[in-house]
Image (tube, rainbow, N blue to C red; front, top):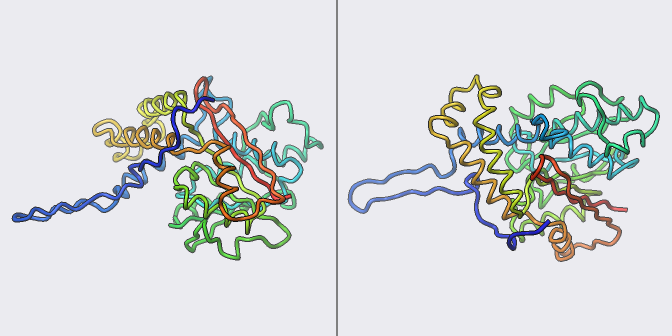
Length: 324
């Protein structure tokens, strides 16, 4: 993996504050202070699809399944000791799908009678992630949280699984409430799915310090990196949206309009994807931030990896830290 440049914290369109223009003699033109929420939701739905969609021939599994498999393989026998808390869940993102697939793998492990039965396939099993669920004693719980809670979306998602819940109050990842610091005999594992690149070094350092001080583990998963191959994958993703939108969003006239008539949605996906790539930290940079965050890393073990999610150029980078 050859990085094309140092990390650059440019602004994505979804993050960008828009402006007001006041003419000195004529009028005041009011521009929305943020990227319109209506369009933001459309873009977020596409990002969720990117996590859960599996392109035939190009992807062995969806990226969400790849995250579940990475957790299953890396945490091994300890995978059931944690409650997994997504601290930047947005509208739900991949976490409901990660929950289903991880618990399906645990159920498969029980049925096979061996935790190592899938080792040759990196923890992947030849079945649908929704075809089985772990028993109540073996199943792991997932919790959705965010600084800006999406209650309607989370409510709908939690209805589909007894192992998925949410916190309705605003949760700051840099200052997690005591209720999310463990309990009931289960450790807390923080998830940052396609999220950690959004934080500048100061905020990222604060979040890592709070994580090290209050949690028992964390996982940072990114679908992009600062490489030429990542930029190629992101451009291809934008083109793919033109091909698959009628099949997934045919009931949304607005989605069709802003894809084909005024292609704002694919433009934002590609533009923000490029900016996300430039923002994404390498595993070494994350570990350097950990050492500089002000919290003691004694007793913490950190692993990282690089997994192909889309042939031939798309790779997922991950960093998993566990308190021993």
